[in-house]
Length: 185
Image: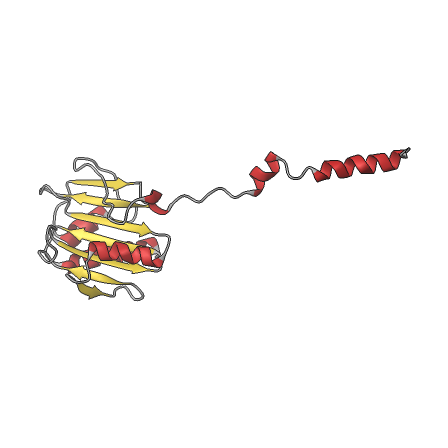
């Protein structure tokens, strides 16, 4: 059987199409896998910072924190393992005077799991500020094994938790509201 030149070219062209996508085509077509929120950190992850360091928190002013929490700041640390860096503010005591954790979780239920870890529902009071956020709060001594107070709220897949070494959760609430506002959450 003799093929004419135009027919042969057409057969070869179709044969090339029948091979399917090449590796380069597959690589460019497949989206890169999304990183796990907060690099896959567990719900109960706390920041790891040094008390003698000084790395400014990108969303909270250090002097504002000192005035709000009522203690001089002697060190500031951030932990970039969190999508929004977690911030710790130090003073003279051994423990941080203030810890701020903003978690970006895969689901609203996992964000609420962060809240429930920070402010266990059976040991704390409800929290609902700012508007649209829900969670819990407790004063110093309310949760066994924890120093100070906490305020933790979630909205959708985002949770914001503040621990303070002070006994009043109103200080933790003020910091949480400021972080939420400054981050535009």
